Length: 127
Ligand SMILES: C[C@H](O)[C@H](O)[C@H]1CNC2=NC(N)=NC(=O)C2=N1
Image (cartoon, rainbow, N blue to C red):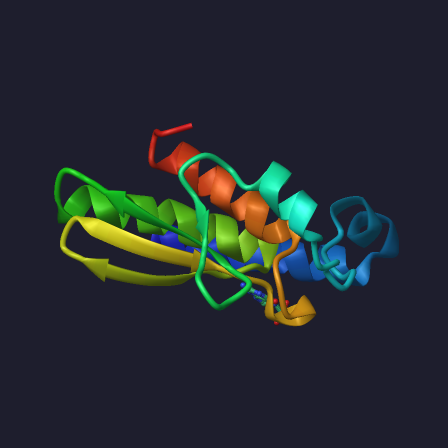
């Protein structure tokens, strides 16, 4: 319940920021994401993530001690995703979470993917 309340209030902050030009500009919440070049993708992709074959996206498989640890990681990542208005594609089986990140709004990869990937690494304790 507390998580849902936190999630709703984060969404409200993001919505408010998107409607407030000064805040939106500062956090790029309402700006259309810019598609990264191949060089930028190479230099900005966080440790542990690789590009997906045949698709402009990055992926990483996270492994945890058990389901509870995997779910804690997913909860933290979900709140970060809501805050960023940028959402992962993911698949969870017991203690593994396979994550794919891409930006539909620019049909490729953007800095949002790199930022979410870096935050997920931190949540998993690996960077
Ligand atoms: C309107 C809304 O903010 C956009 O559709 C957001 C939502 N979440 C998103 N998530 C991802 N991964 N890519 C997007 O382009 C994207 N766009």
